[in-house]
Length: 222
Image 1 (cartoon, rainbow, N blue to C red):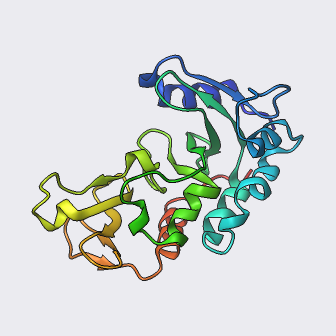
Image 2 (image 1 turned 30 degrees about the horizontal axis):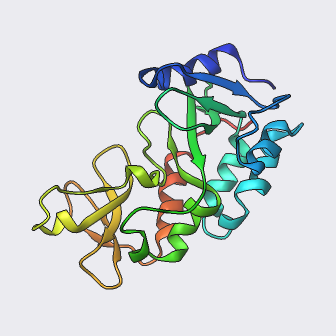
């Protein structure tokens, strides 16, 4: 079923502060030629909500099985979003179980990770940004998904404090952060809670998969 005007309007409302927002659902007859080749394949596919998983998510199939399973079942549509202040992005459109609200998960183009701290991080963490998306999360605030590389940040601006050496790469939108303690060699991943002690995360993607899937269990199946 094609996305409704109401679905599209809710996506555009979510990025209204970026200016000049345009969202075109797939399938598209002629996507911009400067997009990554896998994106063009998805956007021109007759069944884009199925094509996207093979085109972009295969490298993460073993790392994010619950997330992929939920979104495969719930994905209502996918399309190209452009705005004045952000690079082009693919938006994955899902709705609540009662259909009352539309959600957009936004992914930017994958590629080399140029962040100055990237060489310190585990290659298995970086592969998502290199092969699937440079960040993928809730369209309004980027939560509940890996942050785009340019949005990684130190938990504190005080470089002399432990939190000033903690690189945040994921947040839940409610005060909890996941990231790497750069004072340790190699850096160790932790979840930092607003009202509890930090917890070591031995398997980064397993924790991220659990976090995303737990928050999206009630999505309406497509």
